[in-house]
Image 1 (cartoon, rainbow, N blue to C red):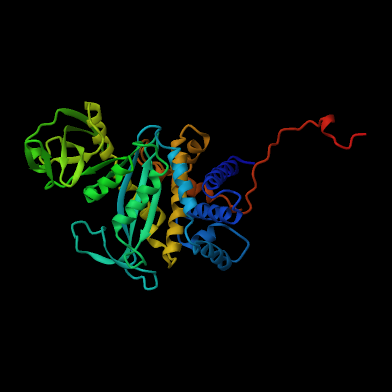
Image 2: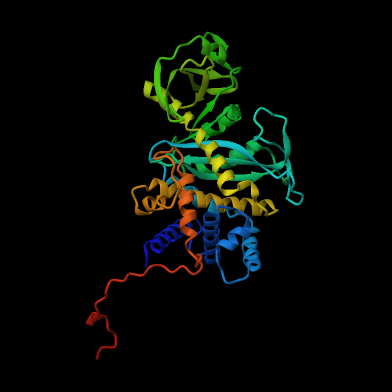
Length: 423
């Protein structure tokens, strides 16, 4: 067996191990389905079923393979599989405080006619045009950060529409995701980081009642309450100076942030909160953060700045899914099938994050030899690892169905005491 075949074998074995933890090998049909999907997505760099089916290289007709995949996607999403995925993801995060990034994105289907429950959503691909709306879906996402390389690990991805039966709101979808993840966390083990859209008292109360931390960018016009009165956050920010110097690298350039913190209260929120006010270099506009985690040292303040600065990784996660894996290009029509397809895509991305985080292992080092590398060091390694896997699997003409595990070729010595029929 040559080196390429051996590498493909190791990669498929890694897929099987991950999928068995999420689905379980006892569910043979579902295990084989997800193995087909993850293999097909990574080999074709697409979530179009026809391209996935073609990449499997099966002797069965392409039409029948398409029908088989689509039939599996039509089932009701399995909540146990979602919980198992959370358990696997948590095992690749830090032992102490685990950081989760929350945000919404959109998938646009402007020419789609038969997709279930499509609604008018704002198209974020037109910066500065807040009134640009078209047909599509909202996607609520929560990702974690891997312990070593800080790669975004998918924990919760839900495609939804206000036209669904019993639909309440985007906030309710977010709450479901946070509650689901919190079921697997110890008290005050997780920190949920969000932008200004999550500066909401109901959101803060929910996270606090789950015995977890939140870190949110605050609106400048929110009132802060002190013993001697109240003041708007922006006015308070203009009256303080940064006491803590926080070095940070942005776009390969070292920058410095001046930050300070203090304790106060908010209207309609009975618990204490800590506000972090920061300025980057000579930028006159403050960045105001709020958290329920007590900040007692300078290092605590610096950590809040670092936690929030990592939020850009979820934006890169969205960009990667759309540009490299064609997330907006799905052709399945029902919301159940769309969410099952998204789940299969998340397993494929989780596999990439695991391979990257285990960078000392043989597989990661060899895959890079098949990728197109421009820079030696990058912050998000998904692009180069996907490129390497795509090239590597392109050499495999047998597909995943005909894959056979590599057997131990060591010579085996017969033992007299293992021969049952010895006379």
